[in-house]
Amino acid sequence: MTADQLKALIAAGMSCEYLEVDGDGRHWNATIVSTEFEGKRAIQRHQRVYATLGDKMKTDEVHALSIKAASPAEWAALNA
Image 1 (tube, helix red, strand yellow):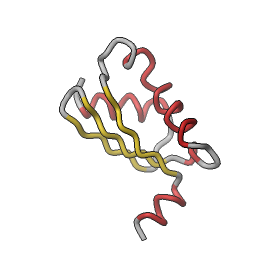
Image 2 (cartoon, one colour; image 1 turned 90 degrees about the vertical axis):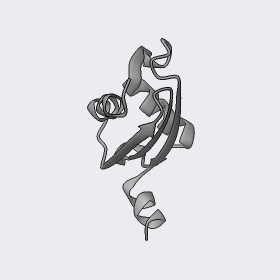
Image 3 (cartoon, one colour; image 1 turned 90 degrees about the horizontal axis):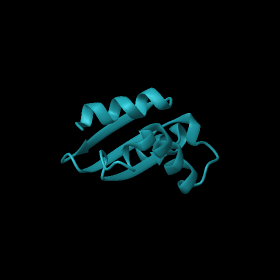
């Protein structure tokens, strides 16, 4: 799995205003900004992202994924 492939999987499964993925091929970091995260707790946001990956986590195609998930308003406040 490459960063571009992982990014494409996430982008295909949910609307993202901003999406950045990097990692070493086993351990990944994703920063995702989506309106789908508004009003959701962190665990719900992570579950939403994991849902876009289907069985990729279970089959170890994606071994580890660290997620930073924010709504557009949260992202704007963090980057102000």
